Image: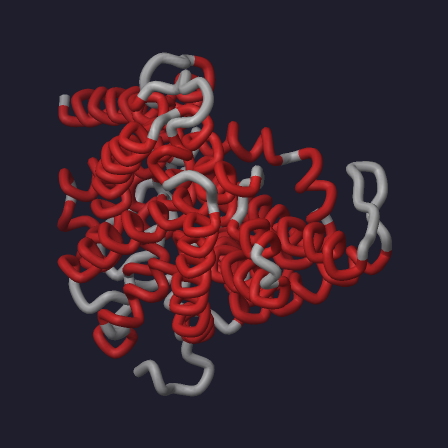
Length: 418
């Protein structure tokens, strides 16, 4: 079936069949590459500034467990059902109701795609070409770098899961090995050991607050997990590859950011490698690190827009790539704060998918199931959950939003069963 001419290898509107499933190693590489998110290094910098070494470790463990439980559940669901996030949303939110989560995740992921392009182009333009880049001024050479990176990353998302896998096989070992080596070199060259260096300065961040930063760093991107684990061999493979990959990948990014912060005053392994006079390797690591997340983000955005507009995933990826590339520099300087706000809107989507799947599992595993037009309780859960996540500052914002969304969903089930 999958060898037929014109066959959709990305299974945009249907469950992935047996022929479309990938090897366990391929899934692990894709999921690990997905977590190689440069913005997570910024969180590592915040954690290093606010926590001592053991506080940092416990924040990673606690936050990692929460994030693993959330993404692991979605990973299992995607793998067992073979359905993308948007196809899952059609069953839980309704055919037209699914447009809301599709629009939210597409908007967020296209935004992060644009930010990622600028995160690569701006530091490279400064270091390689000696350009003066400010929020009000970006030389044309910088825009050229954005355009080149945008074209390359859009191409891998355009060709789908096969090219995402190839990039992951190249990038994951390179970033992990080179980044870790640079981190060890930085620690060895420091005047103080890692634990002693961590303990310098006033530490005002609690472990719970630190764990909240860990959860918030990738909980929005993690909501898209089913888009990739649907290609796994089984639900168990989707579960464990997601849990292990997210825990390892996120922890590595936090460590990169923390070491950069306490040893060279930066927030990225790129700056550590520059400090070690490893410029070209720094550019390679930065580019590959961003690429593995950006193509996944654009792939997710394309699937979401395809669900809304009924056009092919490839066409939507191209449109999304153009929008993200054109707006990249503006997004970098003006939109990161808004994207962080939007991050809180996606966990309510994920928890509703999880609850509805395990309550109505049969509806997700069979094709001949009637799909509602709109499930208003699910829609209300996302809206109210997003509001609470952004406005209530007690505890974990993402979990607060999920709790409200879950309550709305349960109320809806109670009313419908009556």
